Length: 435
Image (cartoon, rainbow, N blue to C red):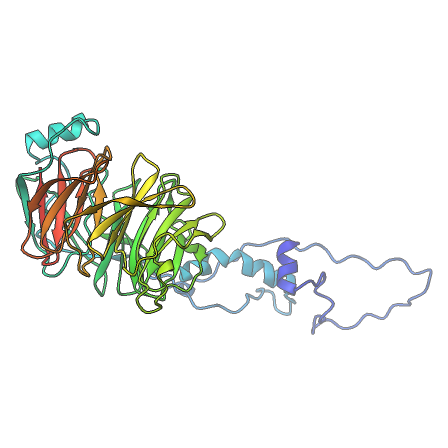
């Protein structure tokens, strides 16, 4: 009855609207002694089997067929029968609304994504999985130099289980995959926490989930803005947050492909976002140069309530291209275009540490990022002079400096398993691995 009610808009009988055109009226004497009219026999459902020509294969884009009629001439087909027959065809018709699965363009000359051809020492380190902090030495030696990009690299990310996918220490071809699925520049890329797939966002106003092994686009999430940054929720890998050029922040569900939450505020371009370890809060960094409202530069958000917990965290007139939570302590750092890294408490009211900051490197308008080591004792940052700077987190003292590139070093990331290995990338499209 639920289906019929939806089909009729609340009508409970198909005789309220019209009568069978071919049946002659039957005259009866309507008196108080007249017996109740004979009930019409209950209609038995007959499965509808359309002719093969109604469904061309492939693809599944069948045109809507007219309601079926009975083979017996003169038989009246009630609206109830039409509704049930339409419902029986719904799964077939619904398939036409599904987007076709596309395949990303994959370079035929690429290598392997397996670990069968790695260096013996690297393979041993990956299998032993040393504890964070087990190595006291900082990366200093160039291990691998990867060339393949022709323009600036915005970010770099290690795969947690094992866009341009590199098998860094492969003794043959280090290029594992070349995925050409975006139609404009790619601004951010993240590995999925539970599968060999990655999420990428770009200036073509889309976020795409890619199967790295098959090179196929699993799902496309369309935006109304250029996508600047994306992050998975650490407590639920089926959710990810996106920020873009219009200042919109959206929480997406990969399973449904829909937006579950949207965080509204008059913001400029989103420069970076960072989830807390429990996924209940996140920090957004915004370009406020157009609005001249510096108090919106850094905002701490409550994910469940969709409201800012504080919007007066950082009040200096500098944009901040990077924010990072400390992996173990209740604090986070902010990379400032004032050429320093500031430290904040991650507990309300999110106070700035006015007595300590990380200095010595340069930002100067480049999207320079920084990241903590696995144990949180060191903080590594790129720099506009092409070098990598290593700071002691407790004292903010400069520990080490590597001259990595001739142009700006835009990102530096620690390996998720091997503690003394980092990957870095440059504004000129170069990638260097140090150990």
